[in-house]
Image 1 (cartoon, one colour):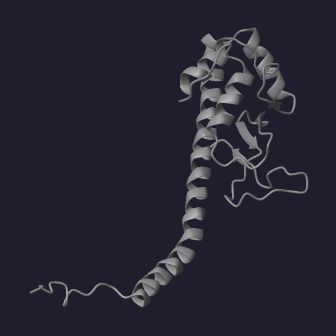
Image 2: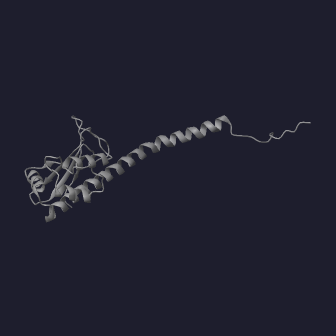
Image 3: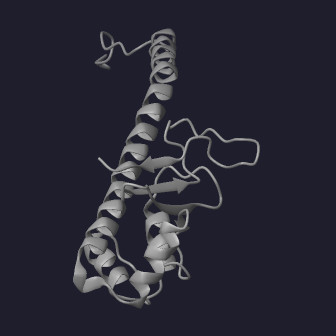
Length: 175
């Protein structure tokens, strides 16, 4: 005689499984946008921290008299004349670039110029919205250094203006 072992063993019905899947889909639909906004806000926060580190590295390097050489003079002249994009022309290889390299938590290729420092910072950015990202360094009349990263969106919404540039770049003024 055959035994019937599975008579009382019931599984989930198809309707029950469909209901569970529908509930999960609704939860994912509600939570996913909030998660994406949270991730973008953390990316922007990390980028602001990186820009603040860059600003502090520049300020520290400029305050250290042992970093003053021809490259430092070129950089100071560039930022005093209305601001400068961080590149090899405005920050050539020299003691200031090495000082910035030692302060920043990044791996920067040699030669240590404004371009390689800028490239390392841009590569570490998480909230880029534009294809071209530039780092501007300005000095206020009071002597405070301001670092602006164009090509990012501080709001975390990936807003762009008509030219495709970020609508609200990350700006780190003096504290």
